[in-house]
Image (cartoon, rainbow, N blue to C red; front, side):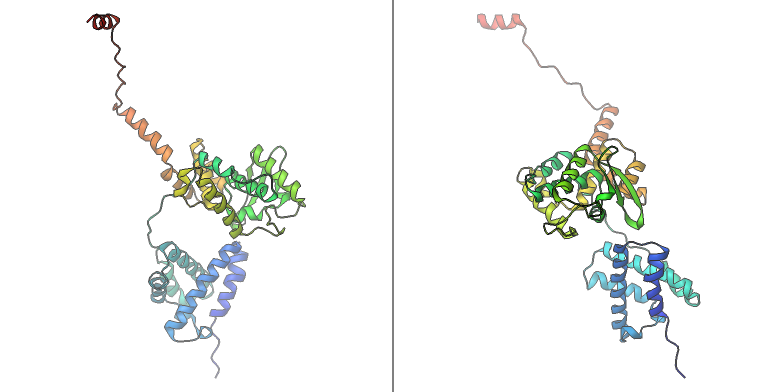
Length: 337
């Protein structure tokens, strides 16, 4: 009698084809990240079980093997804790889908779902002060087409705080460059949001569109070959101009400037301007205000202001002593000696 085929391959297909895209509306980036995580896990599982990947079964997906896989990521692949937690998130998402289709093994999957993420030390957010951004914006040569594009890109990223994927997805018909000056950003999880544009940003984008003769459905930021600009291309542009700016601004030499650093810089500038955290959350497209709250802990300028206010409140600020000035009579007496 022929044994029925294990449903694991079918559930993997439905996880990506139905659950992630149709049910959750996951972005392409999320789908690819989860794909890579499951590929690594099944490869590890096949090696551990000494079986080909095509012969793996749902019974092989146990909490002990998931824990062994997570240890393998850190010890053998040298992944950091953040990457390890991302892989675990993908596995938990897969188990949430599978438990609905295979309730007979619910206890097996619940043990995996109960695995907590590993705590990691949160590094301070790197960001640029407005003065540093101004130096960065002076670097592109706006007399050339490439320089005009680079200037518009840098200003756009700082103005909107857009993720690099959001900036690269912008098309000309997403822009409103007359009043009200704004752009529609296509964010994570298929969530769109409207961001206002400064007058200078709108002017730079208008010049870019006219110079490149872009049509309404064309991607806004393009390479010299008139192809859509890539993430690596944006990284190269920012790295090139930040290295040039570092020769003028010494503080930039200690900072690795990336597209996300400009997003952080926008968030901190909004915070310094006095905007409420909920407003900044919506401006940046954060899912949770706890993500936005990181900028409070990393903002040195606000920490200094709070410390100075605390110092004054505690009564520890001593009045400045006036400078001693000799009396005219005293000077006359000394002159007569």
